[in-house]
Length: 171
Image (cartoon, rainbow, N blue to C red; front, side):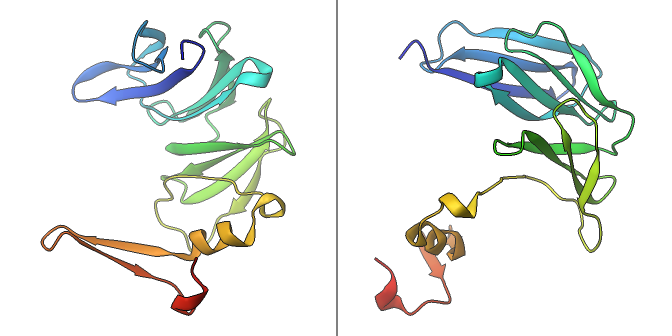
């Protein structure tokens, strides 16, 4: 599967550069696309259809984008975010959404960085990962999966699953 690509971010452990890297899905042809001194690159969106990727930089408090080869880097949201972390894209509205650990909020904007709006900005502490679900496209079976809570117990190697539904409704 040479056409499948894996993208990831790297930072920390004494490394002075935040990076966005890419490889074939089998791990071959690994390459660094973005390397920024003192950056803490965390959230990453790869938008294949539009040949662009977006990332959060917690070190410089901004959101950037480039093409899929790491060229044409631009700041789309410079200095208006506080410790941006994870992000996702709403493919229906073409908006990006991100969490801010420092700002203790979740915000969104158009992909060019305009029209920044808070989504959640009260009663949230250190928001981490962001995932957008379009509930119009989610089946009832998928909704059940979303409501399950899994609690692994490493000592006994057992897994506890809790849900509000009666057990006979789980298929």
